[in-house]
Image 1 (tube, rainbow over the protein chains, first blue to last red):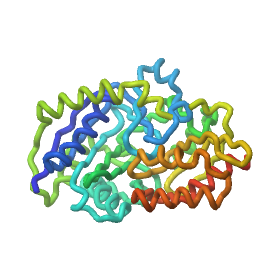
Image 2: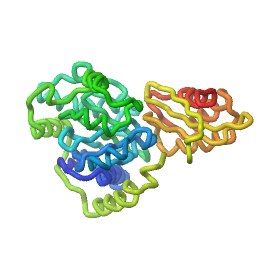
Image 3: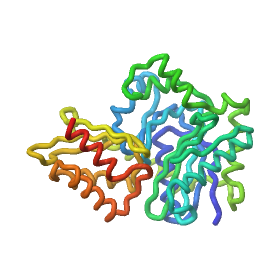
Image 4: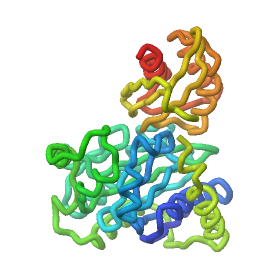
Amino acid sequence: MKWRVVELETYDACMNMALDEVAGESVRNSSIPTIRFYNYKPSAVSIGYFQGIRDEVNLEICRELGIDCVRRFTGGGAVFHDCEGEITYSVAAPLNIFPKNIIESYRIICGWIVSGLERIDIKAEFRPVNDILVGGKKISGSAQTRRGGVLFQHGTLLYNLDLETMFSVLNVSRQKISGKMIKDARERVTCISNHCDAGKEDVYEALVRAFTKGKDFEIGTWSRDELTMARELALKKYGSDEWMYLR
Amino acid sequence: MDISSMKQGIHKSRGGLIRSFVTAQNGIIKEISISGDFFLFPEEAIFKIAGQLKGAQAEREEIRSIIEKIYEAEGLQSPGTTPSDFTESIMKALEG
């Protein structure tokens, strides 16, 4: 089985979600497993499929700051995707090449991130269900879903932290933004630039090597059909009020 | 669904927070909405859960049994979250 690797690309939030969905569809339709790396521009908040948007996101501040907001098709929590501060990945592959056990399959894909971090001399560990920690602090979170014989997982790896913006756009436990809260978060969350001076390019190279190690793969791109489908999904699904305000 | 007048129950499972908004009348669940940062595959099953709870007796055993049956029939998976966790969140809303 040959993997397709789509190199680091930058899209807005709706198109990124649409391309992730299309990656899953391509596994279903033509068994092409895909590894994809991407950034969000403009910066965005993604919320989990089951989350209430008004519970989680300060939509007014998002509008003021020009930050997009999108509902994912995966569960989990709200994430602030800083266009300069993270590398996001997704993996879409036939379910049968991964363990049936959900945590064990998270362990495998998160293990690729742990290996990537090792390559830049950062010692990280997988913490079930879906986190990666460095020195006890979260540096990466992922979300997985499975349907129709396809395993799909996406996640973020923090390169820089902009906690002030993060807390202004996320309604964290509906508490007021306070210095203490930011201090607490600094004790729970970390990022690559806190641990080494590798450039973002170096981190990305390390991730590509770790994700592709031992795999038959080729660097690929989206087909014209995939891009057409993604543009339509971005517009009609992920950009629609119906999807955004689902709950 | 306008959830502003509904009672809210929050329960934290190992897999995430479950927030239930429930309205009950004469011991029967009239309206229900479940949100949160948990995982459940396939995701759309949440609508089936809410749909089948509508009209059910607002009692712990009944609620858990309905959710368990949907889990079994649909082959639902929810790492770190069980039917009992959903039930707990709903009961907190009903008792709140």
